[in-house]
Image 1: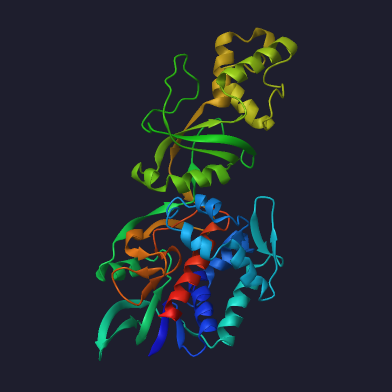
Image 2: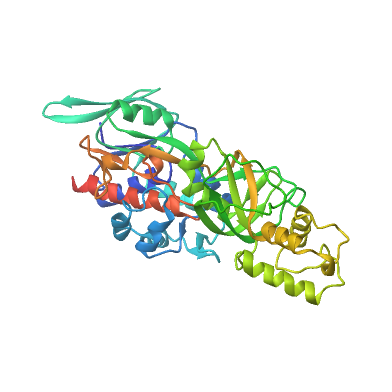
Length: 424
């Protein structure tokens, strides 16, 4: 029998096990892993460099990066924040460096540094790792006056006094937790890119520019490539601003990924067919950009619109938007009518695009959904339904935007669960 059995050999599982073993070296601890490797998500994080944390050390600001779990994680982040994670790795000889956007990576630029750290710590502390052990059943049984956990894998059955589930987005484990009475919020994709077929972004993949992106409430309207003279103002369900990357399949970049995270459940309900509106010049609104275009028309009257680098946009994107506005390729600024100027301003600041599906964000696939937050005690990350059952990481209905925030949920929940397990 183990004192503590941890299902899931990922970031949350190892972080929890290490903190338990350090707090009480006498405990017999094992990590049970279904595959042939552990820490696979750590390996691919940050393009193989491992985005360990984000340099947001204020818990009140940190929670704003969690579409699901914002309210619940405030208290836990006060107990174990990004700063505490930073010190955890620093104490083990691993220095982290910060990039311009706040993401933090090991100085080595290799996720193997973090993997080796966890494996070395597990070996030093005597934590057993049980590989090729896919779990097929979880039950609680009475042994004398105590209730213990019985975990059956494809290999054998293990017993333990305390059980922690850190399996991430594993549907089979969620099904087993359902049998124990837990509510599982339906899993839906989060952090994905948008599939878009539109002439305005065709053939210019690789371009990136800062933009404001709105998810429109009406997703059934047809694709529009030339602005209509009479426009209806549509309500935006979500708004994000930041870099937008044009790809060969559509749109990606931080603004798109954040929108996909905050809108995960809404977009799933829409079957990933919806309309977005982009302001390619977020410092301008429609009226302001028209005034700017009128000034350019007055100053650059003899130049063709298409070949004028009039605004701060990649030239090829400007060219596509000018064409979409209906302005002929050889038309000079002096000859542009008020109607065409309005059309161009709409393309620049109110460009509507129809999204027709999603693509996963590299290998760092994140899922919204999991064990209902209502059934978790966030002071311990323990189950409200069963004694001595704990959770850590993405197995619960918490997810974050890209940037190291999903890992911080793993670190924090693992630490707090470890403390609660030891104190019990």
